Image (cartoon, rainbow, N blue to C red; front, side, top):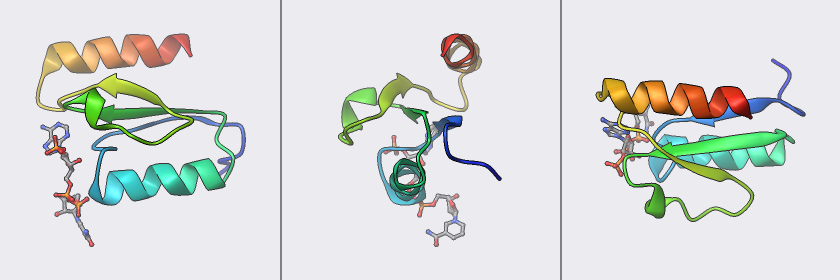
Length: 71
Ligand SMILES: NC(=O)c1ccc[n+]([C@@H]2O[C@H](COP(=O)([O-])OP(=O)(O)OC[C@H]3O[C@@H](n4cnc5c(N)ncnc54)[C@H](OP(=O)(O)O)[C@@H]3O)[C@@H](O)[C@H]2O)c1
């Protein structure tokens, strides 16, 4: 998988595996990282774009997909 210059979206990016994925994507040179969380204020990493997303909420999913599609 080509990560360098990719646009990516990580769910649950505020902690645990999601947070670790974001760090790895930053190190690998992703061009843009949407860091999604139920509470976007819990995203503390620099260099990412926080985005609100509860994966059980259809309206959240639609809004996140539309926002990320704009890059
Ligand atoms: N850690 C491991 O070694 C490992 C290995 C294999 C599989 N897994 C599986 O991988 C998943 C993540 O593991 P983890 O260790 O990173 O768990 P974790 O530290 O408990 O983190 C869970 C993450 O999921 C988010 N989340 C929960 N419900 C959500 C929802 N409805 N919408 C959006 N985000 C939601 C949480 O956000 P909030 O802060 O808002 O709660 C948090 O960011 C789990 O299903 C786990 O069973 C983990």
